[in-house]
Length: 184
Picture 1 (tube, rainbow, N blue to C red):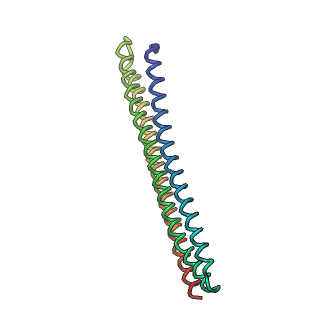
Picture 2: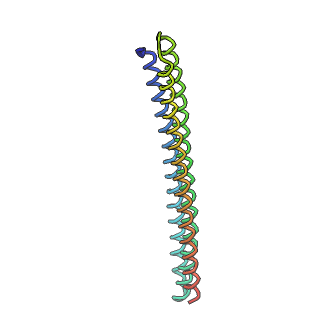
Picture 3: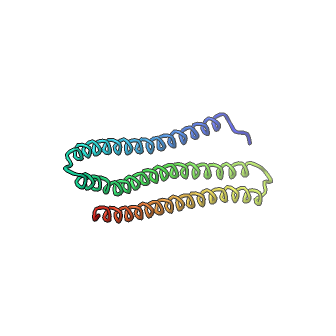
């Protein structure tokens, strides 16, 4: 069976639409990350200016060091919040891209199975074994894709969990250092 001009055009349109959807979702994720980073930069700049103004009013070294400690202590908590927000955006973007890809693969699989059925019904003497083998190959490819998507999601979840655990450990360590510095 030879593909017609209409079928080729329809396939090209479908490919372009999928690419456009993937691009939109990827840019949405990048835009959210840029907004997050800009907000963090603005906040950090304002807090730094406020802190410099406050420390300029310090009466002695002990007062200055106390101000420094009070300024630095919440930074670890803010770093954790940033990390969580970053991972949320990354996970949402990845989930959106995966959903678009999954939907596209499901459509293509159904199309190929219909095409196989159509071609074999029009071909006299076609072997049922050959048709079943081709359908099984398409099914196996779809299963492999689904398995890789699940493995990717598990890897991302595990990475996020490990990053959160490491950040929380660092926060606990910094709190201990902060408490010992303030005590001295």
